[in-house]
Length: 338
Image (cartoon, rainbow, N blue to C red; front, side, top):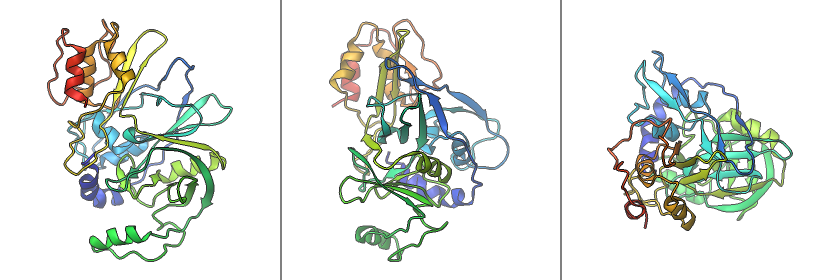
């Protein structure tokens, strides 16, 4: 996601001034063990109110990059009035244990499975920027901190100083604290990674932090009040999710992969395929051409790729994909893997 940093720089002034919209958590009934599909996509007609795309994203509990993936070409400063936007509220659960907190870095979402409850709550998040990556790991919540203070590390202070910003040794708790009003420390490492809030109206659904996981103020408050100390936390990186649902329909959901260098283009960067994914593509019931189209498009939404079915809830592709029914699995692998 190379564009996250320059996009952030462009939008800071606009988003800080934007009106913050309160939204309830995106809560879904937990599907049975043999199903991973949740939610439904909806649409939204942009009013003539002069508000940025972040305002719409916050209203529907979506991250900014997710909105741009689903609606390519949309002006993030000022979406054109009358434009019909797709709200990407349908998703596949990550291929992980359904317990505690699960973070999928590639899709910039956090999933919370409350113990003993038949539901999953989904939050958009901000994660570590290029060079300060949020690592994959299995850990737990070691400490819950209301009204946290922020003590920038030496490396963070040095990085800010390069941009002409001198950080104080410690930022006291309160509304001006970049960590917001709630934080949960993870037990991994030296405890340097936290799940916390923010004092800004931008950056959720983007790579903006120094490695921590960032939520909107209302979201971190709700999560903080729900998550017990000791809760399991698993952080994964799954840009491609796929599933065969109980009705036999086959789905694939593709997100732009995380960049490793400034030169990476998230829309064209190759996405390595796991052995299980290759097996899914080779199956006689999978339409390999539709898989290739979905990986080229990278809409961030589940797409039906069953033989005999037509993809649904997907905007037109950015580039004209190959859709010939004769496309081979090897063609897909060659184009997007390695």
